[in-house]
Image (tube, rainbow, N blue to C red; front, side, top):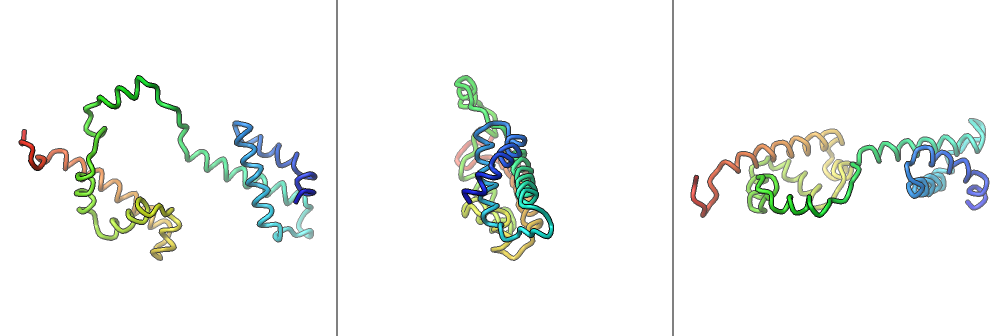
Length: 170
């Protein structure tokens, strides 16, 4: 692996740097590329292309996958003190949701949706892990979770209009 890094490190670095915004991201990407190369080195076939072509294509594909993955993540910026103060004093209904209301709303969802929510939110399973666990297709898992979240939002909106137990109705 050392000789591979020595021979192709520059090429991989240039591919990674082309796709990453920051040097630290490029470094992470280079590490990912060489790890993938290590795992899939057996796929190299000299009849199809040279080592440089194989490594270059693998690096390019991995960089594109990485870039797509980064595109799905929002750019997060730290909140200023002023925005934290505004947020804490906000009376907007969505700024504070009590646990009891959420649990009440969850109980109104179909059993299958509740089960998928437990896998995802309590168990921390990814969509593909849930698909493997349940035997559902990945698309079905994603669709049902999304629909469940939309339905939960609707239910939570209706709960806001109901009088709270122990609180006078207005």
